[in-house]
Image (cartoon, rainbow, N blue to C red):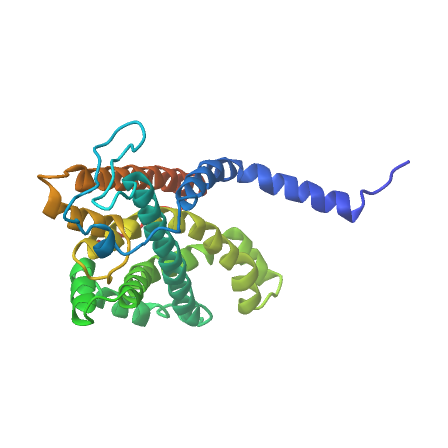
Length: 292
């Protein structure tokens, strides 16, 4: 009665084994979903131009923080808690898109040199990347966005370039490490081509680490985006950085309009940082370069 297991059962076992290997990451997805759901459930119907929302009429309608309005209200009577939550959702959205494109660009640039069999194939990539360290990233972004007159598109483009420049050398080292593994040596012994080995045995290891890279970089990019918006370099758009900047003019009359958005931003960035650190540790991503 020795019967072989069907292919379906075999694939199911492999799937369950894979799920068990990444169980820590899956458990960390749950608080991510809760945090993002809470952020993106903000009322998106309100006017999202901070310059308009923070205008103070002749008879201000603001209220101090109370049970009905945890963060108080603006001069036009807009609930500051919902406004801050919408601002953080906007900043996180920008960070998610920017980080994804930056990682994708870094992977694309690195893959251009991976299939070269030479030992010094990454020298040109590393030399170009080192040029990005001559000028601090934040200074580069301020000059770039300032020269453009303050544009969100330019800010996102600059952030993508900064991420790609810093990650290219890291990914190059990951590919070198992956090519020295036992499974790669055995693949060459079996007669597999370099293309097959890189795509089927080395690339999956690198892609697995990119999840931790993404989780670690999102809070960093959120802070960079808020810093640029605080300086007015991302246009007239809603962001906690812009809200803090506009609230500074009302720090005497209505201090909550500047303080409370900063508190929410700090708590959200702290939560994203802790979750990103745990995901990176679970996937053994390793040390990443400091962007800013």
